[in-house]
Image (cartoon, rainbow, N blue to C red; front, top):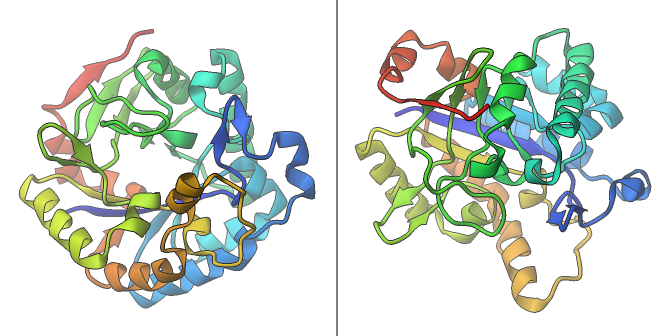
Length: 291
């Protein structure tokens, strides 16, 4: 089974709210920053368990903390982009999205000296209405994407999309889409493998669901944010139920991450797409996007 580890490198206040985030962009510079304290703990867990991961850096984070980008690369991980300003694709025009991708890639490539080939949208916001994003990603040299949630969720979702990795044909080039891993129960589909889902369910459930994914011959894609293990982050004053959803089990998640990464051979997206056998296996799953 292909097990892929991915980290969305963003701050505690990068949580979508309306057309922006919990804190609007104009307030980011004055807000407390936490990623520089949390990423080293992730690096150490991954080194201990021989994990190679893809770090989807927000361009704004990379600009503020270029040393974090350099150290992540030095430790053998892949640097990919999460865009620059953490804005949902469906809240942007195509021109705005193109400018955001260009800025984010430029920042990362200037820091690393390497081409950035991977992208993940904030909030899994490639949806049916924003299929045009694939043309823009391909135009900017993106080779793979992991921005589709093929089930129901609070923010972006595209439940009609394939559940398996798919070659997307654009007017520029092909892109491999890695939809987020879900377990299909028929009437509903659940993710146990990222963010709040990863924090909510105990390790035993995770392992059982991973076994189902393995039997279905799908890749196990785990995604996590630095805030998912950060007990010292400022807490947003959400209503009771929303507060539970955003902060449940954070004190236990770092240990869970350590334990689970010791059980699988986690790789980066870059490593997976370099496997010729994997690429051959995709040839029966292709789709064409609207231009």
